[in-house]
Length: 451
Ligand code: MV4
Image 1: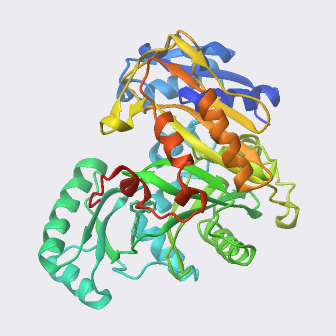
Image 2: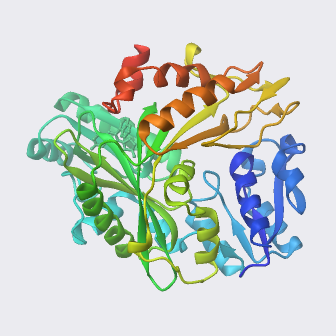
Image 3: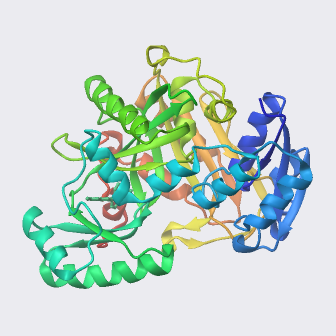
């Protein structure tokens, strides 16, 4: 097992990882930017090293600075958390060559799964259902038009290096498809340094269902059930739950088996997530595999009783998984609200600043993952996630009632947060019935847009 880990991240996830390390008797090294000197992860780690300026490019994305910190603190592993360097194959490769374990899959798996065209091709060959469309990158207008003629409108143009909904365009006719092709290619080049795009059938009002995977270095691979992440706004998830109200035991077995097969096809190791779209007729399709621990991992922890960060660290250290698929029992229902420093009443405008009043919910069935404290100054430089409020109960209804009670308790003054929006959603009968699709938030807010 590792004796010392550097956490190449900040905020609630850095705190979460430090807590897991402490319980495993692993020493921790925090890295931080000049804007994060008084951040909770810096206070809780055994050692802390400032690695650069406030902007992420100067610090948390600065590979030479992170690697230097790992060398001077003599760690044997780096945990990348989510975002930042977590899905950077080049960074994972540098760690491998510096003899510092990267807590995640191999750089080869990250590179393969980061290319959504290559990943789709791999899954198609492994017998996983995928959405019909172009099999290779679409390079010309003629190719795009031929694909659309074959699969019929509406279609969607996606960047091969995208994912998580970035760089996508829905098209209903030839004229729109040609312009989407050009703008998607240009955007993909500017954002990812790779202009490859592909075209596939657009699935209307799908649900986003993802399966949590765990795999050890011998290739023993299991799934921990699904999370339903259908409630999003502009590709930012707002609420996640496990299990999904749209998945019954039979569908779970079918999708779970295919998720495990997908991970095995990618020679996958440690924690990962296989994302599917579920259409109105109950058909499901692989869309991508995420090669990191995800923000919403606590809902899976709540229903499985497992600690995913510890499992991720153990499997990254080469320990065998001591769980078999039949040992995984899903119990109860968990919901998670993402509390962001952004104002839903004002186009989700960022709302950083000093917290003068802080009151955190607690009691039975409540978990709060956060780096906040009274007097903390939320910096404007990073993702606006402040806290994850997770509730648990025997049934979905119970988890909802606990969430409503916990949202009432939560006070983060004077910041504008997503708490009022969550209160609105949790009071909505449509949400209670679980009858939701990806258009739900736009309908609720009356901000229906085309993306
Ligand atoms: C789609 C789609 C419809 N058809 N692909 C968004 C996240 C990214 N991983 C894939 N996404 C989508 N891909 C096809 N062929 C609709 C979405 C989508 C979406 C998916 C799940 C949850 C919310 C969403 C919001 C907008 C679009």
